[in-house]
Length: 72
Image 1 (cartoon, one colour):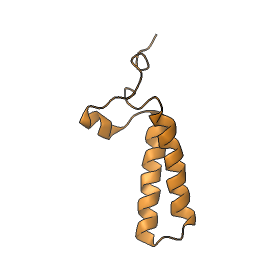
Image 2 (image 1 turned 90 degrees about the vertical axis):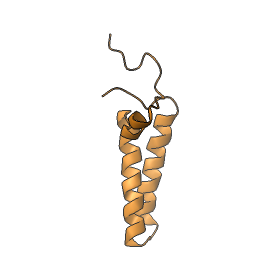
Image 3 (image 1 turned 120 degrees about the vertical axis):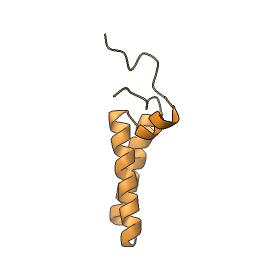
Image 4 (image 1 turned 180 degrees about the horizontal axis):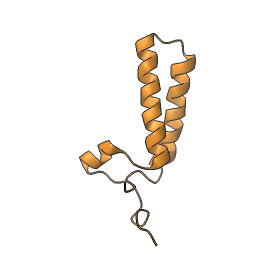
């Protein structure tokens, strides 16, 4: 699994994931809204933490620095 999420996008995804999870838990949304917020937050948090997004692979997007995926 090569890195395709990098730069400023990783911390933005992590912060967005934490915020969406917090909204899902504490905002008093209806069950469907809570489920959507929690799912989207979990996806954003995990993709930001591991640096890989399957959707970016399908779309051919790569925001990782050039040398980040190479091993020494």
